[in-house]
Length: 142
Image 1 (tube, rainbow, N blue to C red):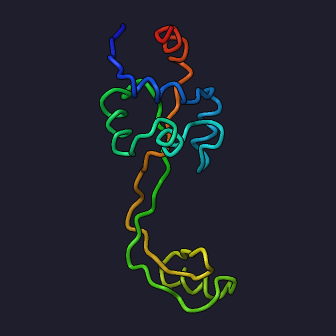
Image 2: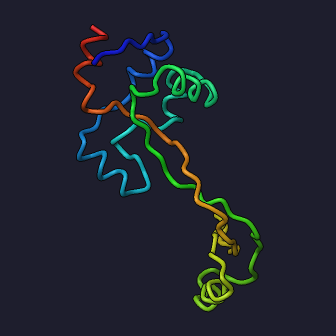
């Protein structure tokens, strides 16, 4: 089966900078929380071709759907967040937070907060060209 997908110049620019990892690298990355050298982050794509995240998402939805692979991470949506007095180095404070049914969250300056996770929300974070379509992709560009 074959299908035709018209691609704009902007989409071709996007495709030209995407990495093409092996299936083994993709499986390994899905177990971890970062793309590393395996995929191309949205921020890298945006700065390379000069587009906003909204335009990139439209390209993904309208032209790249089924052509590229998408890496996700899980964003914890929290509620009931409140600051806890004390230092996060103190294990008793962390244990207190867990005992109350909350999870600790840490600010960059060392402040500790307690929060309840409302739900886990998947968030797109990068793209890649699947190994299975790489040969067809390269021949279509030529």
